[in-house]
Length: 196
Image (tube, rainbow, N blue to C red; front, top):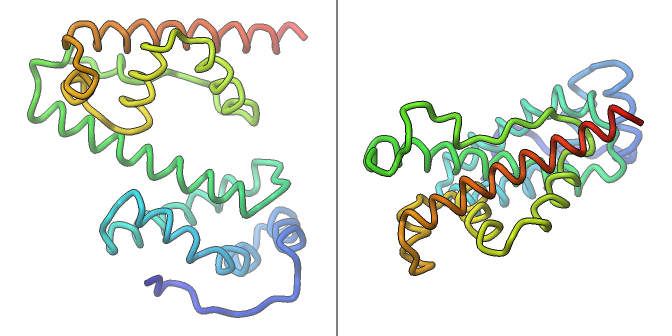
């Protein structure tokens, strides 16, 4: 269970606490707001980490991200936004762990020593997730499923090939082509926004 925050009740709404934090930068306001949802954050982290200590560490990492992100983003529903932030943090951690495991134990599956082919470079902004979701929907089904399994669920090429009953080369091709198509789609969206 979480031990890093003491439960204190505040009569201020989420919006008021967030506005006060954004205006002043005082961590006490953000701390009070985070306390309300600390169990939610911990629960999401535990679902992905499956280890109590790792879940606590992940929850603290989410709070550390909040210190910056809560001042940068326009947040309309703090609870929902925090849930998405927490989930994304956990998925990124799983993806990093999966990549390390793949590099350490299955180097023959890597196409190059340069691991940049595992990432899709996207400028972070408020429309990023919507743009990514739109582009994911435009991918052919095989590419979308393989991209989702690799990037969001943390599976290796080999695992995806086994549960899809596909050759490893085809899975690699689906991921490469899907990543390229996503990048092209996202670049077009950025170009459109810049041109507006």
